[in-house]
Image (cartoon, rainbow, N blue to C red; front, top):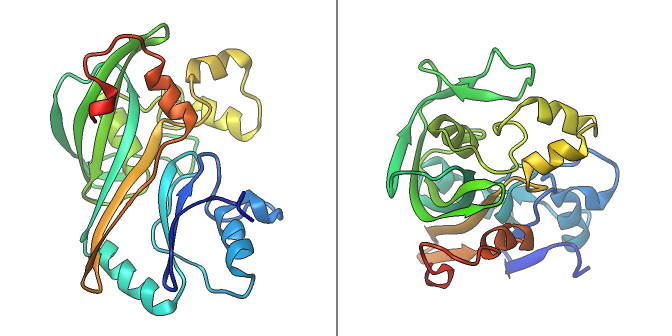
Length: 249
């Protein structure tokens, strides 16, 4: 069963996984391997309780924490609800972000102008949302200008990072819903994206990775880190010249 996922940590209470991009957390098909929860049940046993403490969008890779007991799930979810968890993401966005660091403070709510039911947007009457960012590296490829960002969401709203970066004017590379054209999301869902549209998306999955999760629990500080997938790394490392040494980050 070693091919189910990359295990970052496991003990009697926790299973910490580096979720691959393109894998949903909850099943949409009958195939057990088509969702993360299905793979976890194959790993733990069909009758073992599975409690996701955090979740990631299908195309987002990185740290996912699974509680293996009811007590652990209840305690850890309380930490998340009380914002006692530090979450660090890496994102590759379109364009050169001018500021070295900044905070996006814009409320989020349903995007009533969109054909996509699940899509949200920045709106004054929405739920409070805050995202902090820091520029790692600005670089240029044949496809255009890009920036590698370190993201720290303070709140945890649906699609928060993706919406905030789009609102900043720097959508995530490969994001089909909050990227350059939301119609690509509708066409992707119907498997109708053309070769030219895939080329404009550049990345097969959106360039967002949940890199680090840190929290204090049961008298101990826990820190979990997940390495991004090859597609993410190769997009950055294929540049021959850069403003900063990638190895120093």
